[in-house]
View (spheres, helix red, strand yellow):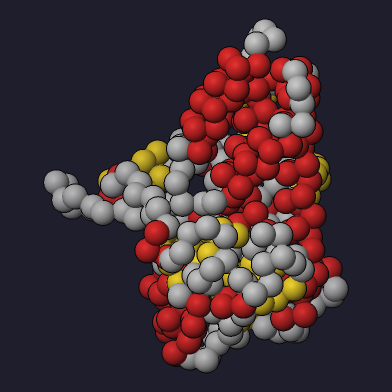
Length: 365
Ligand code: MRU
């Protein structure tokens, strides 16, 4: 996506890889919207930490980081012993997989890299194949987001008011985004509309990241507190909801997404507003039988008990908001059942959630 930084318009990918130095280049998302910085991770452990600490976040972006991280770990191996190489690769895979549990994209991305590596019969061949496979995953992520934008754009009509939750924009992918892709495509087609960004406590990805992206893109938007959506629905001020997903179950049609998504889906159903989920194919999980099986990440209580912001002097600081001494419970995701979802927007069409399994071949299962 094009970004204006200090008056200069430049294209950035959220996640990129420099093969010469074996380094990943990541936009440091914790600093946005106040500061734009690209950081380097020099080995797979640092790449895993960047995922865990949310330097990079969002399903597709951590998928690409994991794919490149696996290649990075494989490329750092010295020697010709294939058995030792495979042991190292398994360790790299597990380290990256365990960094965050809910999104399925990192696992899907790394399994694909491992599958492609099997065609090599030497360490050097497998290292080269790993890098190519990681590059392919990143490019495919961009292609899928572009395609689902084309598929979803007709849903965005002139003058619509669209609600989105968290950040399923280009920062959550390698480029373009999932929930934002139909918006960007509709804008390119000349339509104007207004977006309400849920603030998305506790980490405020809507207020910080989605709002920043939409501002960069020149799309009319307002941030609303998470609790404000009910009033807007009741007043008829929301025409359409589009969110992303961290794991969509191909067997049941259930959708795991940022905590608070389920609440918005219930409200949309109550008020007869269409509720769509936009995903690339790497977000589909064809194995888990039901939503109760999805591992829901629990994050540090400090995220709920306080907030990060910029002081008047420009320093980034954490402030405690909650009652001193009170504890907090901080689940990162919830699961929305299929009967609350109007359609799943994919690169190959829009499907009713319960029809995903029927169309699994088209959807890459
Ligand atoms: O915890 P995050 O920020 O990594 O959560 C991911 C998200 O931004 C949302 O759940 C998003 O809607 C899906 S990721 C495309």
